[in-house]
Image (tube, rainbow, N blue to C red; front, top):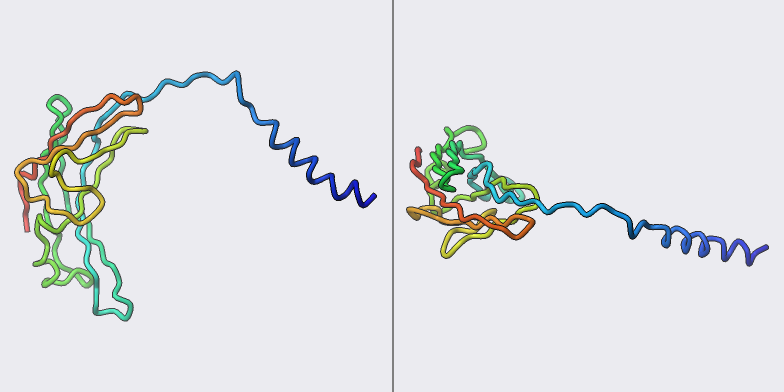
Length: 154
């Protein structure tokens, strides 16, 4: 009886692991979209007035005009007013050279900077006149998008 109880879990594990469906599945098409659907910016800083040096993040108001005909994004960035968490002195530190950009892209696509364009998701310098990004669709087709910061309002 003890041998049966000992080998029963092993037997069940073998049966469960071999029952996966491995054939007869429909082949799904790969997505071919390589679009940028939004572009946003934020400012990050370390608040050293707290005990644990807390990371603070404030969303910059971004109006992104996306043109799918010429694959361009024109952004107007507005720094929000100071408040209890975002002091006047910290607001003064916000420039195009120390913000974080991020974007929404098509399903299953990837994005990478072209040339010297700033990386997305980390603090970078977005003060260049033009920046380009390559969006690669799941089917490996791609589009080059050009980002312009047309106005920075502080």
